[in-house]
Image 1: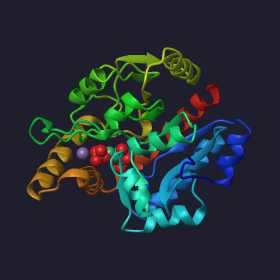
Image 2: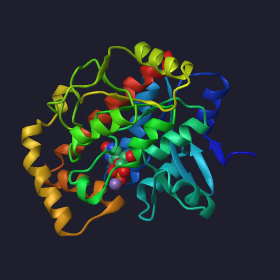
Image 3: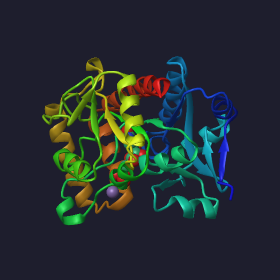
Length: 300
Ligand code: PSU
Ligand code: MN
């Protein structure tokens, strides 16, 4: 049985030589950031990982193959096309068997990275428990993936549009280590502080890599979530964002936005409400996560 995997030249060479690789997701490109900024940011994220001494592999789906590392024109297509599927665990096999063009969420990227033998992955923010989940049951498949697939993911926390206390509880229930990187506070994506304590704290890439190894040694399924706060110079304080988030959530409800469309809709609303400032913050935190993920990968 051969897996439907194709590697970019860069990723294939790093793999053959046993050099550190950091995976990158692609939903942030297709659904999380506006064109044409998304293409620029996708390239910047890859470059940040190279500068930090590791090899980037942006993961997406097309032509019936999981692409581990995208060619220039493949990245361009993913960033500019408007019919890209948003793939989580449930959608991945269907998109592959249909030959669809698809971007992978955190959950799907973890699955693909693991199939490709990549253990570390950088993103902006993970999906989580949505506010009002007690009524609509909207809980991202990202959370279950952390319990299943042995990949260490670096994020700036869960997006502040979510219910962060419930997201932490759901991760705890699933046995997922949530590790503050050089912080004891759970960061809230655009803000450094959430008012919640990070359940665990580690202070270097080597420590995170050692914990990842120990998990494997114990035969425990699942990965690790490393939460890394946005640099202070780029953050938007939580108090400033709170009313904008409330307004975006009210608008989503009024317009009947549901399912997969919720997260992209809310992100777009926040960008508009902050006149693009949240976009700059989103980019800064992603690049910061790329640097930390490269440090972890180098220690693996
Ligand atoms: N982080 C960002 N922008 C994004 C996402 C994360 O800065 O667009 C994406 C990720 O791919 C994540 C997904 O897995 O949003 C979560 O979507 P949902 O809430 O529908 O599970
Ligand atoms: Mn959802």
